[in-house]
Length: 104
Picture (cartoon, rainbow, N blue to C red):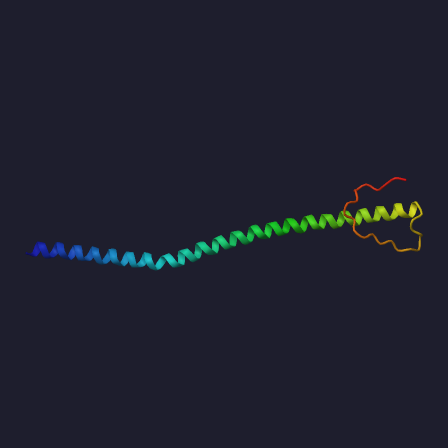
């Protein structure tokens, strides 16, 4: 009789251990899901940040180009007499103008 109760207690022990492991796994799933969600969100934010940094760089290059084009255009306008020396030259909308100044 002693052998049967020993086997039953071993089965009971492993059942309790399996139940505890199952509860532990069930309780660990939510934090693991939150960790995965945080990682995914961080990765998306980094991708968006890289995209915005590229856009800023492109816009800064456009501004520098427009300023350089404006200075060249102002010199050309003064040379051909469209702007007097004391006048302030305002260049509005450089879109569509080529990077090379026109020659007259």
